[in-house]
Length: 486
Ligand code: SIN
Image (cartoon, rainbow, N blue to C red):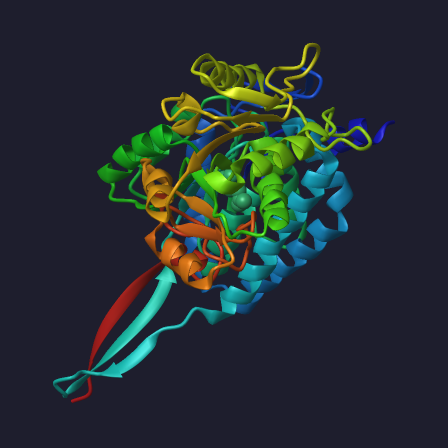
């Protein structure tokens, strides 16, 4: 049996409720596809509203016991899960590559990144603290404690099938919350593998319940109006996030939203150009460009723009495109035909309006959903690619004259997730970082993602933070007790 067949066969394909794998109500299933080959890999149980309701019943049932479980115990389960994930990096990476498309090297990096959230929050579980203070006017004491929010609904995207799960599951487990997880329809296998692994690490039945489904709206949608649910955390598009916010209003759920981005990549004329090009390759090409923190548009100082564009085109043009599991592949397929067509449409629009293709520029014929790494120069300000999230391997380049103009371009978007800035002038670096309307800034680096740092955005990119010391706060409520001391 090939390694590919083995990793797919070994994954449970059911719904996970109260520590048991079961079929979906009605016995239905949906196909999971390999986007590098354009063929089905396997079928997965298609969860229904009844399955989601059973999952919430299970989560609600064990919530009190789980909240009362010693933090050290909760942390040690996460720590064991981190160990299991790192021990199994090769199988998990292959599985992820098969269902999502990214290269094996990228998948290995994601497995370790995902595991790191479990280790980080294993360490945070034992640092949930409160306060004890004297009333400023005397006579009593103010006691403040942190308690788990309660049962959570966690909805994860297809682009990082493990990491976007562990950075919600890790803090929820650490805080003492139970949960229902709805993995992305396109990439449920990695989450199902993680579910088995967390059970093996000792996570008690009912704490984590997982409902794969071909329709989030029909399956977990009804949970949003169940008063026993206390929180929803979502990573995905801004329009879907807005819809969930409206639904969350009904029960005043705690909400965390990690939504779309339109990251500017600014290179000033005093930047180290070698570093800027290296950073651009990472910020653009990580995850095939299918990331909400991918550099979406490059604004380059006029004096260095031509050289920067030529060097970036050389680097992207040399990248090996192929099936993610093939030896040497650097750029895998896009997730599906719709995504590839959208990228092609944005490139065509820019070219029609006058942009110049320096490398790439088209989809690859044949099986799978490939698009060649592309650099576009002289992109006019009216091009859609500068305002819409590309989610693909395309780097559109425009120029700016002054720092004020660079900032106006960077901030001229409804989104505010991340911005990248290259400059060697410390004063400018801090001035620009302070003025950018984003939740994160990469200063002379093309990678901000780190389990120990607070990931999240402002404006239409959402709110709430995942990772860092902030990450666990999303799963905790503050209770204040007024203490009379007589
Ligand atoms: C995302 O694309 O949603 C986040 C990626 C990351 O954590 O780097």
